[in-house]
Image (cartoon, rainbow, N blue to C red):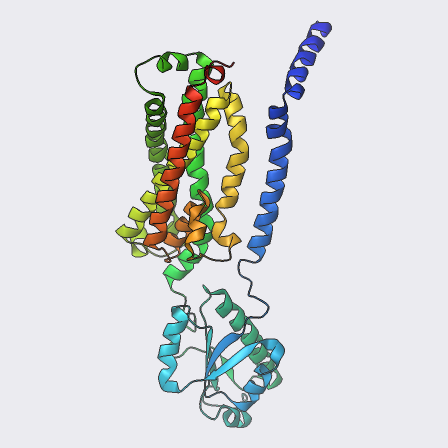
Length: 400
């Protein structure tokens, strides 16, 4: 019995370790790709909310006192103070909401004089109040608020609380001087999470079906029977890819719908209604991207499966591409935002992730979606031609 076990072990180990493709795809590539992926994710996630070292913060100030201006003026603070009339305060707040500028400081007139005579122990009126308006959905605005708040808070403590910071006012009765809308917060969070989740969902659905449909039939010997039918190899390849894509797309749509509908509740947002944030047009564009991405994955996996001798081997080939696809899902994070240049939308999968991120971040471009769809369809047709050529090779089709 012992000898039989050793013999079997020797035979199986010889088969495993003599197969260079198996060694590469199971022992070497996964470790390298996982290391690269998590290294990239760590680096990009750390820099997701970072601000460039040479960025100059645009800080609008109403009634800026000389005392605070002096504290914010050192060059190393990288603050550009823009003196703003009180009549323009609402317009600046709207610019901050629209993520066009960074910060608004509102001081009462004659702030320094009021602070000098204010005594917390005997005062019967509220202390002079400093309003700091920001938009936390914009990294530069959040960073500017942190810097300015730290400076003013230190000054506040040095003067033994002779003024207040962000006390409730008529414009902010709850004391929240936050100009990020609920939609901004929602987009900021899911704009980072959703693209990679969607790419993984689409790929997983395709991987569950494509290898079985191609490599499975090859393994069972039924693929050869289909090749003797009057249908051309191209028609057979296209029919395979389209039929598989329909099932994969339905699977992806179900998963994506559940994820998107659950996001408001997951993030604890009032109402939990996705239609409050996105329009029907957004979902039509998302459907176009999902459809073309499914075709890319199915066609790519079909070509790999046609080369494989079994479903297991086909899934082994697909594993590294799953990791590559996950990295592509971080496209907007890798680039530090959503680019408008068409060049970035010429790369299959990468372009899909950019468009998904753009849709959920309210920055979608119909042109970029159209370019992505066209590029993905061209890639699919190339794979159809390649699959037809593989079906024409008896050596590959009957290789077991």
